[in-house]
Length: 255
Image (cartoon, rainbow, N blue to C red):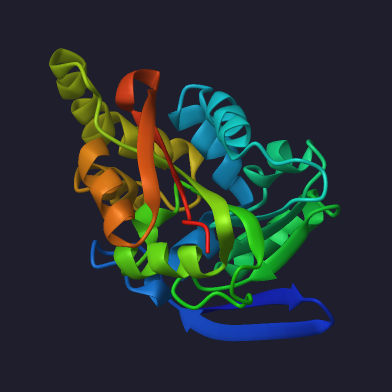
């Protein structure tokens, strides 16, 4: 049985978490936070490279689209939730705002700090964010909302930390709009993704969870309705890569 040690630094404080596990972690679709965090800890070192392979090089294009939708300016404060190693934060930070890269996987944060020392990494749970009310001009989450145990509560928590008039951008896998392509994509998810991950990832079972969680995710219209139900306004979306990914946007009402 091996011991995994994870370290996260928030400001001047350091948190060390120890636990034991005897096998690779594979989260279930009820998305228990401990399981999801442990799963991402295990894939952290090769996570970005594996994603580039599985997405056929589209990840950079998606990250640029997120940064453009956030539209941050110098002086803005932006929260990038579920930021992992910070690859989603980098294009946003390039425009000059102060970006906080927040994640609850200590393994991902550790890799991120080593690779992106200029970013501000903070450990935090999407259901109880360690930030004050109205703290950010914009909040965004890329490929992470799908892993939150309680999606609606997570959206409300993002609303809490956004200033009145601030904006939300959610980038997430979705449902291809063209039916023939949707069938091909489903076959790729359930067949090719685990097979490719078995060669590219340190924890192939994590990508079985990835495929299953994508298939069970709500479509574009349903997620937009979830945003409105959580208290966001003017929810809209646009499809990327034929609907493989959808970019949802919303705003917090002015006070």
